[in-house]
Each structure stands twice: as structure tokens, then as C-alpha cells.
Length: 122
Image (tube, rainbow, N blue to C red; front, side, top):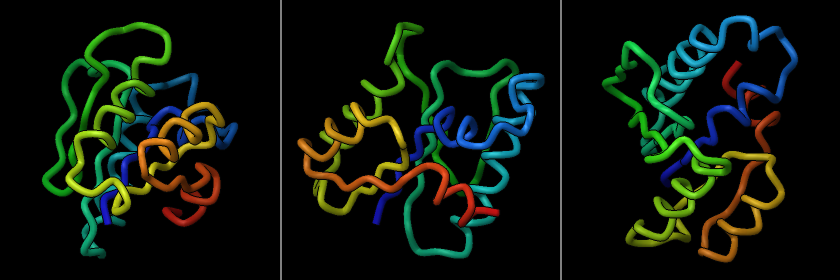
């Protein structure tokens, strides 16, 4: 299975003050994904709207970014990743964005709700 995580959708699924320190929230998500992915035999890609400065790194999780800072650019990148996958039926997209859910389902992937996924990570 390949999990593709809509980063800001997952981060925003819990009103825990993440907006006061966006960078720390992003790093915390990558850290939780690292631990979760290390215990599984699944690939994990997390998609952010734009690359943080300085860049984040992970030896377990692929960190991807939308190529442009435009509205819905992370969603477009997620759909592109699903479409580029050799077998979209092996892809689970983590998001609660109903428009993105519909787009990835049309591309052959399944969707998993952000809040339920974040609860699973914690």
C-alpha cells in the first residue's frame, strides 16, 4: 500500500494551535509519519503546499511539495502522484477534502479521513 498524506488537511484536522507555529506543526507531522511508517511495510508520501525553509528531511517518508504556490496546488500534486502510480488501487489518500476525495477516487485510489488518520498516528 502507498499512503499519500494531504499534510495541511491532516494538521488542520485538530484545532491545537498549529497555526501559531506552522513549521513546528509540519515537523511534528513528519515525525509522527516517520514512526508510523517505520513500523509498517507501506510507502508513505506527505504532500505540502510549498517547501519549508530550511527543508525538512526524512529517511522513511517521502516529502513532496506542490510545484506552484497556487490554490489547490497540493491537491493537484496529490492527484498527479495517484495518476503516476503503477496501480492506483494500491494508493490510499489521507484527506477530508471532499473535492480531493472525489478526484482521487476517479483516479482509482481510495481515501481515508484525516482526523481518523491523525488519531491513528497519535
